[in-house]
Structure formats: C-alpha cells, structure tokens
Amino acid sequence: MTFLVKNMETEEEKIGKGTVHWQSWHETYEDLLSKDYLQTITREKCLQIATDCPENTLIAQVDSQVVGFARYGECADEEVQEAGEIFAIYVLEKYHGQKIGYRLMQACLEYLSEFSKVFVWVLQANQKAIDFYEKCGFIVDDQKKELTLGQSVTAIRMRLGN
Image (cartoon, rainbow, N blue to C red; front, side, top):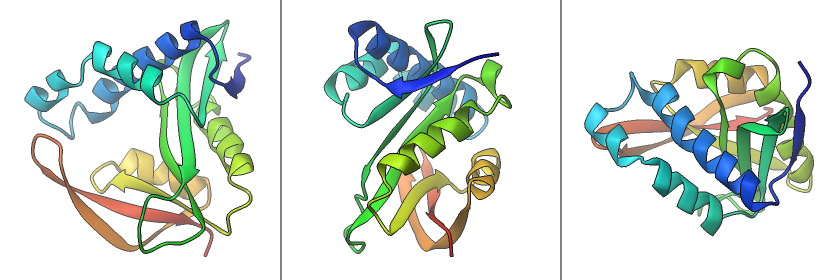
C-alpha cells in the first residue's frame, strides 16, 4: 500500500481530516471514555476544528482519501520554553500497523527540528498510544494533568529522547 504525507491544504482535505478526527476519536476512546461524552464529539464539531485550525496540520492519504492526520507546534506548557509539541496523531483503525502514524510522526519531527525538546500528552490509560510514542523515541516524564472528558482522566506527558 502506498500513502502520501503532506500539508493539509484544500477544503476537501479539511473535510477528510475532520472525518478522520471524528472517526478515530470514537475508535480510539471507545473503551477509555464514556459513551455519553463520545456522543458530544460529533463529525460537525471535528469538521469545524479542521476549518478553524488548519495550520501545522499534516494529512496522510491513500488513493487521495485522508486516512490520518497530525498537528504540531510550539509547546503549550507554560513551564517549558522553546520546545515543540505533537498535539495529535490519529490514523483510522483500518490503517493501523502500516507505518502511517510513524511517517506522520517523522514529518512532524522534521518541522519541529528547530526545538531541542519535543513533548506529547497522552491519556494514561491509552497504552496503545504510549507504546507507539515509545517506539518513536518518547519517554514518560514526571508531568501529569487531570482532564475532564465527560469524567476525570489523567494525561501524562512524554518527551523525545532522554
């Protein structure tokens, strides 16, 4: 299977990204978050996010269909200066295990190469994502935060390298 990783540019790509965002959230968090909360994550809401926040967004395409995306930028954590952050990487479940997430990660890291540190936040209960980030060279650091996603959940921060 051949896939392409590129910057999100067109309206059609934004619609594809929004659809992947919505579907992958439901696939990824089905067993981690309440069904009531997941129902608030609508396709329309995800399409709006894709339209409102197109910057620093990469997409992965198979046969011109968006099957994954990633967002990156300057780290949002106040206590960290001059660091990059991977805000999101999602790939449709059907395409897991085909190196698409890894290629999205590598492309993000290329864009973030100006930073000496790169971080990612992940739900502590999402072992599959933690395993993926570890394979990409991230390690858990000592930062945690509580999020309210229909219920209280813990997110842990991971950093690239030592």
